Length: 274
Image (cartoon, rainbow, N blue to C red):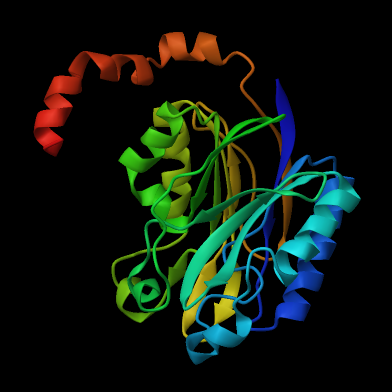
């Protein structure tokens, strides 16, 4: 029970949709050649992050050009594909990730729920979680900041998610530099979210410079015990590793976090005012 997962790390060039789609095609091809059955690419992979007033020009519909392109890729290489781009829906824009199956069909479109500060000026947040059954297992779909909300990830797991997928673009710039924000914190988030929920996790990150922003990479694949199995630190590239729940029941008899929470639900409800 398991599959080979790939996390793609890339530097999406701001608003260069053609070039970014071409780069994704090359990286997905490489991941598939290494035996990957699921390929994650970073957040806003077609455009980069800080698109500013070019938002209407670079946003895409679902279905549309982007989903057509990744659908062909998934079908050509026989892989599941997951990554986010800027979606236009009428007069609204969303940071939306799509999960595409090996037939090239869209299984789910997940609109990012937890928006970062600057994103709130660009995007409308989503209001629905996404937990998707596939032949690989049950996948909980997330984007970037979602990992900072442990109750949200726990909710996806309680809803049946066996693996958490995170397409992301962890950034640093000016004011947050002095707080020591760097790749170490997102890597720690990936490890802890996997460990505390005893699920597999894969996180694909942007890397490089985008205007005043530094995209600091450190994509990773994490086991249900919180062990980093593989990753890409700096630069563009692909990491591939088996992601499996083999032996998970034995591990959960030791790491009893999910079961133990049931003993304290009344206390949690009081603390959280539920």
